[in-house]
Image (cartoon, rainbow, N blue to C red; front, side):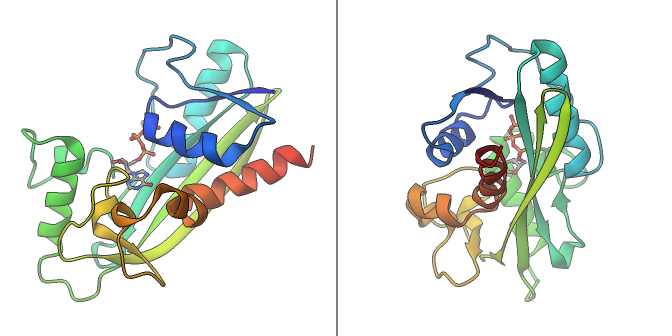
Length: 198
Ligand code: ITT
């Protein structure tokens, strides 16, 4: 069964391909030659995931799913949250000269310079649009924000996030381990269980 994952992020495509198994052929937006920016202009992960999935369903008529992920830091009252991707481009300070991931990490560590309470979570919401019906799945992983970046694997905020029960960051972990325990893995497991149960 073909299913479209409404993302241009190759890291995510690779991660989810590994989780989905052989029953599904996963297509990314590049495979469909969709190069336009998909709107995601809401204030919650739920609304953004939904908006992206419906946008691609309406454009292509294909079954598809979209995700939105945020890093929620307790001492920052849930920020950067839904604004995680553009954190270093909004508010103060901004780091327009840096790669987004590098700027985001720099800004977050700066905002948390004096914070002793460093609990945080990654939260992923997936919207699946299947034959014109929508279903949502959520995955969460709790953890802490480290004092400094460590590790070169993964992407985004991985170098500064240590999941609860581990002593290494996501960026120091093998992808196969991250894929077993991550926020996205948990949301995808619910998605896959749902699809397999149909
Ligand atoms: P698409 O919208 O094209 O899918 P994106 O990179 O914008 O890709 P999200 O909106 O889902 O992805 O992610 C929001 C931010 O959170 C972005 O800065 C990501 O780098 C970061 N992020 C998402 N998943 C992550 C993960 O597993 N580890 C570390 N950072 C992650």
